[in-house]
Length: 560
Ligand SMILES: Cc1cc2nc3c(=O)[nH]c(=O)nc-3n(C[C@H](O)[C@H](O)[C@H](O)COP(=O)(O)OP(=O)(O)OC[C@H]3O[C@@H](n4cnc5c(N)ncnc54)[C@H](O)[C@@H]3O)c2cc1C
Image 1: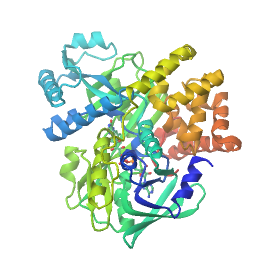
Image 2: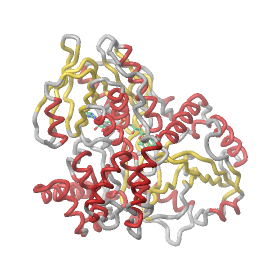
Image 3: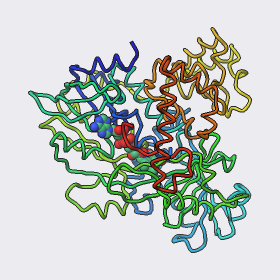
Image 4: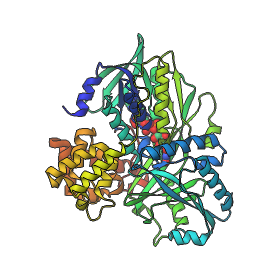
């Protein structure tokens, strides 16, 4: 039986130690931590895993340099330690990257002052990364020709880290890890609310695909519904110390602007940090920070103009970027944790992004507020501690539940790959050798792919033109990655929908074959469903003239 159906059967009337509602980074890391330490866990996600906020981030794993300005050194220290921990634990996935920041005349701080701040940031981060460097306008120009330095008075380079593949893939790997430890995780299953019965919880859930209703029993309930945490708490009658405010942020994906693998950082017109971030064969630019009242958002004309205007003012491109250059849009809300009784004004302006876990011991209920991808290992550990404090047994408290496989497994993989000349099969336009990519994405499971390619070299062929995904990856995705809709693969397990124009995808004969591998007899229906969704999104956006001219704007409405 396929993975999803079998997990749905296990959910229905299943009895778990813990049920987690929400499969973004907070829910996924909590599930991996608990399952790895031997707790019986279920996780339900009403859309796809990482289908909301966690697929709209800037892909940065950073120590929070911007909180240096508000002198929140404790937060910076915590985030720097989390960043270092992630770089060490995921050397192939979370990689150090240089940030080149340009300061223009009239900015609130002199570049030398900021450079000194970058040194302090480096020290707070235990000197784990390469040292900061001061740059004159000429040196900036020499190292990055596209930066318009006419108004620049200097700049500095420092290091943080980024997710080489993308955020949604990173999150899915925690879900996959939890599944490996025996967790029951299912996408497209929505919690309709939960009630206390005896010493536990009964959660009413609905399979969004079939409409089937289920009941899931658990001793502890964890609300990891991201921006919808408050909404879900109102369904279960939970009162909490915190609540969420929302800040909308968008990114635009455009053709690659520079070949240098560094982030270009600027201060935008609103005084906030603004980035040009490498994204495989493309460049990702953003972001914005607009307070909104609801978590369901789309990129408005104003958001898009803000990003384009700011970038065009700071770069010297052959031709300024226009809407026609946009390949895709990312748009989501940051769930910001604030005290429930306050107005939230102070917290919002200070842009604090700390997470908070509210524990209701009496009801055995936890709510996770706020947070960052960068913070995910802390969230996992804190959730285990909180669950333990509720009297649940944690059988393997010391088990390390995260990180890439040990070095000897990697060496064995690389050895096998070398013996079969895997890298010689890399497509000529690929950005990196096959062995590097397969290891980063699949870790130990990449060994299974070698086996498939040895049996049938066609498995090493790129299937969808303009992407780097192989036939064997599609087969693997079908078996182990719970692809329920085509978008799950195109947008989240891979980043194809972010970097390939929708029109190019439509014309690709390989996409049809990919669909057949993923969905068998349902291939046509799934293809149609996918393009109907993108069409509908464009249709919906017609009212918003900004999006009418774009190919693939995505909203974050869950469960679509
Ligand atoms: C523009 C932007 C840029 C960012 N950049 C960075 C960055 O560079 N680095 C960084 O570390 N962080 C960054 N963040 C922050 C980070 O992305 C978020 O803090 C994080 O993704 C939130 O994860 P989450 O699990 O709480 O929420 P989500 O990812 O939204 O997950 C919650 C899930 O719960 C599900 N759900 C809701 N209700 C139900 C229900 N009733 N039943 C079942 N499921 C339900 C939703 O469908 C959703 O998938 C950024 C955020 C934004 C918006």
